[in-house]
Length: 366
Image (cartoon, rainbow, N blue to C red; front, side):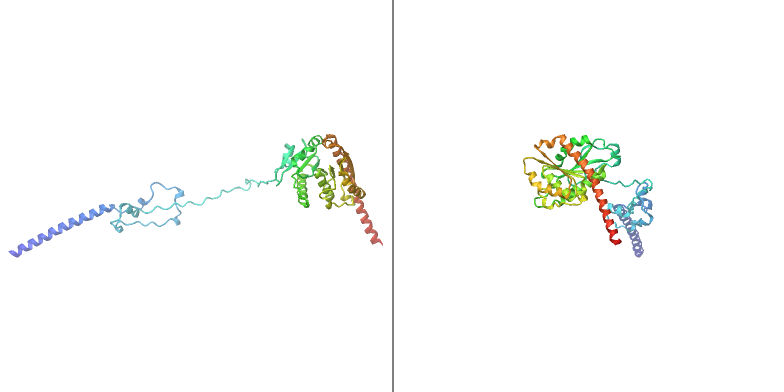
């Protein structure tokens, strides 16, 4: 009897222990589930995608999308915070891959032609419609270049141009004013480049190339006759013009020297020529009662013996050089003598070639 009671008590104790153990275990599991915010079911794949339909630019190509592995809640650590658990349970959204922009296709016919940039000088089309006239500062050069264009000049004809020789300490825009009145009345182009006067003892070759480059460029872009280009210089500019006429005689049809002549800073560079093809006519105006005429007398005699066409005049006051009648006289002499001397040059070249051919023929005939 006593053993039976012990057996019943033992069984009853086992039952109570089992009941309390199961209850405690169930409570512990529920508390742990609540602590880690376990979902009641496994996440579905679509719950890991962003809300809303993605745009085409946000969808990566199939081969570029990373493989997304769904994380089972059983693999999660219970002690992880809710925020961290949310990150681990949700599959990361794919980073949007933006395709490179494609260049728009341009039809060859619709493609614009390349624009050619030139200096700020009028082209033929602009000259024909609205020809600029008056005093113009020509752009496109390192140093200032001033040009006076006659009013309403036409492209179907050519005009004379007077180039003002640079003078020491003279400004180009002031020099060009000297012949503006005459240019308006006679439809003449006047060119005055910036003065790059050399230092005492230096050669003027840099200045020479600067002037000849500007002269060539302007002649190519404006209706100027190559046979009617004249050089005029005053004072030290007259001496430089005398030098230019001796060194570059084929660049000008005739030259006017006002106030000074060949004697001066560049005298040692002057070499007279005997061939008419290497000569240029000179108009010389020297002030009376000064030593200018005496200093240039030897040069005058030498050039006259060589056959240079020379015209010497005296003036009493500086105001005479500014009178319009005097300027007309100078320009008319340049025009008339320059054109006639061009004929002499051509004839000289023809005669020289004829003599050369005759000499060669006689040599082989003998």
